[in-house]
Length: 145
Image 1 (cartoon, rainbow, N blue to C red):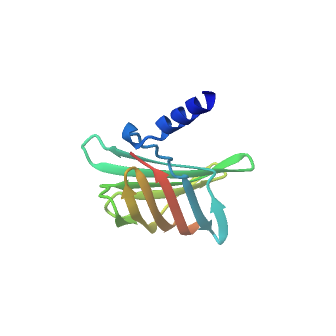
Image 2 (image 1 turned 90 degrees about the vertical axis):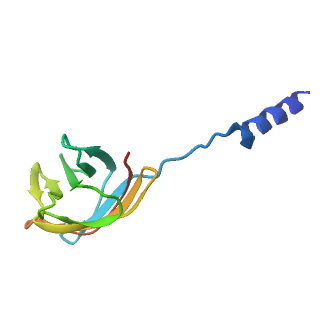
Image 3 (image 1 turned 90 degrees about the horizontal axis):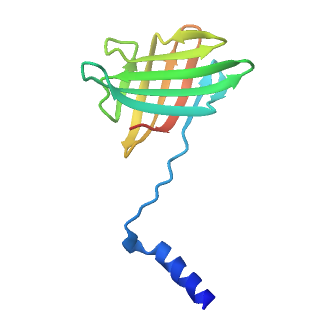
């Protein structure tokens, strides 16, 4: 009788008629090559929002601890329209920065390419130059709603 109960309970939990879908969120990550050295975030996240005037934005941040300092890569795309290539530091207002040793260096040129924007998953690549730092082969994957 006990073995029958286990089988019934197990079957009920797997029944497709429950109409339950369990989605495991993807691993959030950000990597880049900074001045020729590999860099990998220990934490990455993304946020979609709108400015006070209703302009859509996408913000992506990756951070890692180096010694006593947090290093971070920050990307903000103004007038976000989904999958597309966005120029950094042009008249669109899209910006990027690299923070290291307590100082922030703003990008003077670069590009962000969003290759996936589907059901909260954002994925793409980036490269930018701050003058002091060159960030190449950048990649990000995170959720953003």
